[in-house]
Length: 336
Ligand code: SF4
Ligand code: SF4
Image 1: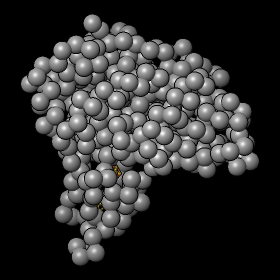
Image 2 (image 1 turned 180 degrees about the vertical axis):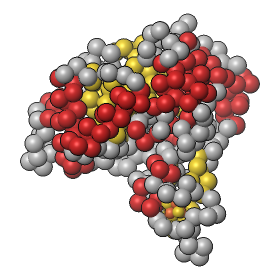
Image 3 (image 1 turned 45 degrees about the vertical axis):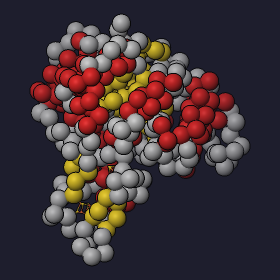
Image 4 (image 1 turned 90 degrees about the horizontal axis):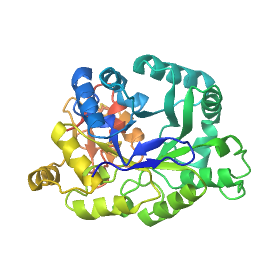
């Protein structure tokens, strides 16, 4: 059996059900060298993965470029950025093309959209990406999100139903969105504004409206390792989702995930090793308590301890997205 491929909405892009999420390769996690990251990615492509998820924030363009030099058939690459106007959008897009050494970026998304108002605030950047799509330099545009509202807002924009969530704002541009990368897991861990059932419903409606979906955080940042079978079963039941991005750090993990997604038997030892592996967010003792990380965490998992004056994490809320780490100028935060 091999990895199934699915069309991503109406983009005409076919992606493997298992996507390689590259956050794990970058500086706040394993911090692999571009060469080693490139080796792992190239290995994944040999195993049938043809879809790579990255972001400007992740710092993994060099790893992907190293992998692209090793393969004859390039994978589908999705990137995302926090651009909010034309200038920041141009900068992010140019950086992606330059550092990936590509003319065309398959999918370019607005990163971490939280509400309809966030979408409104990033409209000028989205317009720039639509222009690049019209020139053939991007194949599909969209958003990534840990929230239900933007999924519903894009669906409503696409269907011209703008009375409810758009509060009279002009949703015309967002009618052109192609793809959503939502957080979708058992129990909805990390969701900002609702339950897993709400997100299932919202993403089903988005798919029915023609949007392409690829999910993230199927294991809840490691929280569901104890409920591994149920979490994986939940993800596989989401047949309206073309793919799931999964972070991988070794050939053994790639083998295991490829087998899992292909419906092949998984070696017990590999499964047990994955179940036993629980990553954590660590905060170094040189933390100055500046609070920058606290405001970066939409899951409200961080706070400043009144006694020590340093950041502390509530592990029950943390989904190990790593976003806070990028907000720390002193490099105190790592996911290990
Ligand atoms: S951003 Fe860094 S230094 Fe500031 S509170 Fe967070 S961990 Fe500490
Ligand atoms: S504490 Fe950091 S890694 Fe955890 S959910 Fe918040 S931003 Fe993400």
